[in-house]
Amino acid sequence: MIRRRSTPWIQRWSRILIAAIAACGALTTAYLTFEKLTGGNANCVAQAGVKGCNDVLSSPWGTVFGQPLALFGFLAYTSMLIFALAPLAIKGAENKDKRQKLENVTWLLLLAGAIAMTVFSGYLMYVLFFQLKAFCPYCIGSALFSLSLLVLTLIGHVWEDLGQIFFTAIIVGMVTLIGTLGVYAGVNPSGAIAESTDGKPVQITFTPKVAPNPEFGWEITTKSGESELALARHLAKIGAKEYVAYWCPHCHEQKLLFGKEAYKEIETNNVKVECANDSPKGKPELCKAAKVESFPTWIINGKSYAGVQNLQELATNSGYTGSTNFKYFR
Image (cartoon, rainbow, N blue to C red; front, side):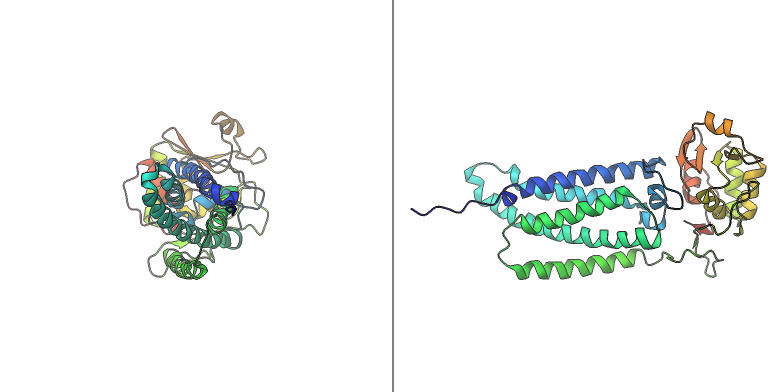
């Protein structure tokens, strides 16, 4: 009597495991998308000298085609979830052939999707640790989800043609990498603050090299344009508030985005509220009353926005309709 070989458990449950991981990834990226679109504060506190999740979300790498990067992550995870579960929805012996065809197609889609997501996540991990020098548990978790999806796709199915896997990996990996580099081609990884020579916005970052002055923090080294001045006056007019601490490097990055002249308008018109106890200008009672938990925090029209905001974000959230030819971004 010939006994049939039993199917390994990993192959019996691979689609369910893939679906579960994809669901976790979809929930994570949906949360980050919501926080980004609503100006919320992702529950991830930055450590001293290390950028956190909000810094990553507001960085140039956090937006693709004008939309949050997390939104595209959500769509990718949702697609993987659908690919994993689609064949399981077909029941009945009479639909066996149909289910088998759908399984074959979706395994190829799962393989291509997992490869693309892993390559893209690998690039983002490089950016996270070497360009942004930040720590973002959500980002790291998403990268691990992508890698797990690839591993499960490879070992959870009987691939009769290993050459097919290799060929798919090469093609999808190259297309993904080239596309990724193309999308982020305009990002300036050096973070140097300089005046633009071609009219395009310049990326700024700030790493303190000297101790801050309790009077004003660090010196603002960027110059404002007409758009920055107009936005600053608009924010003052509508009663917006920015809660800061003089020792906070991220608060200084917000100042650099406005430039020296525009931020003078912010200070003169009492938009800025200093929260540090040891500052001569400190008003910690106002910050406590506003329930400020991190710096900087903007309150605009009764809504709170935590973390450094690009001026385009401030313009949108405040209803500003003037010129948006801003000189800097983060």
